[in-house]
Length: 132
Image (cartoon, rainbow, N blue to C red):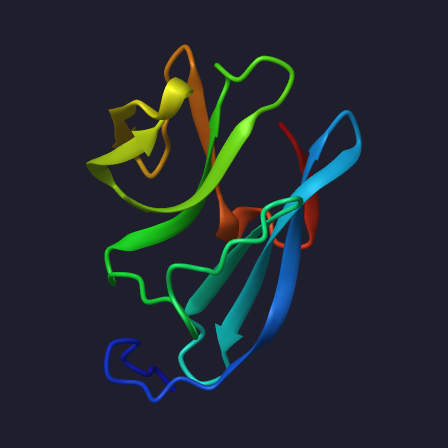
């Protein structure tokens, strides 16, 4: 049965987690839910030590042509700054970098790669620990 992910009345169930590690020490995670009907994924970022309320209450929405990913900024000395993002195939996202300066990062084939930033897709890493 093929269900349209845009018209589905989603029934999310917990699907898994990705641990974000530095030197084998977990500094955060991404919880992943998946709709039992259409298999669309929903994600929530959890950074240890950050107790702010999430920007979105409930299951966050993602465009049909985007994928969940984590971007990592290499510019943070001694600690890597990471964020859950929605990447499109060949697009640009806004990234809050060093000193809260907002820069544009280009994605190509759902990945960001430049000298100071990189990314990985959630769908390829569920139930894994990723070293950043």
